[in-house]
Image (cartoon, rainbow, N blue to C red; front, top):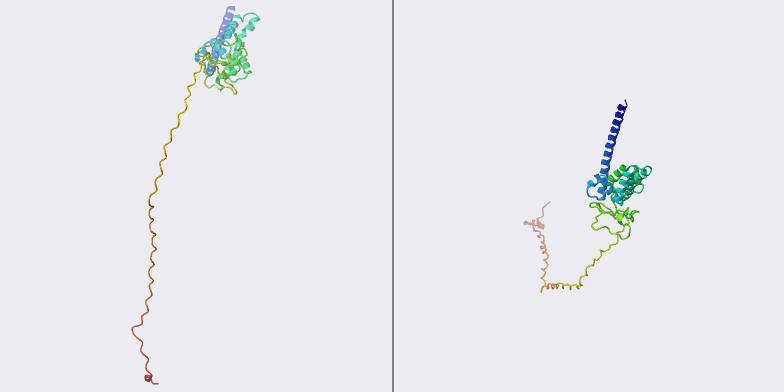
Length: 274
């Protein structure tokens, strides 16, 4: 009877372990995908870096101005010494503390205020998803980290394909970014930011200025052509046209006397008799 109970117990334990394994794999795949999007914003070359266990956390630490070796020591100590009674609980929290420091700096470069790090501590997957797909742009030109002057915590490593973070190595004024540094695409400097003062490299000698050459005299403008001579005689104006002559007035014809004259009155002696 006891053997049957032990078999059922181990079967349940195996099912539970398989379920935990599947959930861990799903969470790791989703987290690596979100981390890949954050790396793209930061200008990291090679998306494969987000899928390599442990190494992706070292890259995340570099982007957060934290030495990747500090992150590696914290992960190793948490994995090996967390079984120590009482002290092991504190040691087991070291990876979470190192990740929170890096997440705080990464969040500032993605326009997230300090309280956002609380979300990382409680729900790191949600924090990664928000920073992976929101409209924030990577901006490394922020104030240096409080540990930037500490040689143990500050990031001094240079890895090929991972942009150097100027704020991580700029504890002193006049810091110059390494040669060949290119800001990531879409980078916008913060309002009021001033570029660092330019310092020429050691041994640089500016070229001698060219010898002064007086400017050549301006060419004489061509002489203006003489004005055209006026004609000797002005053209004779045509005489004005004569007014049309009035037609001669025609007199009306004189009245003609009739061709037959009236008969002469009779003489006195020839008056008719009554």
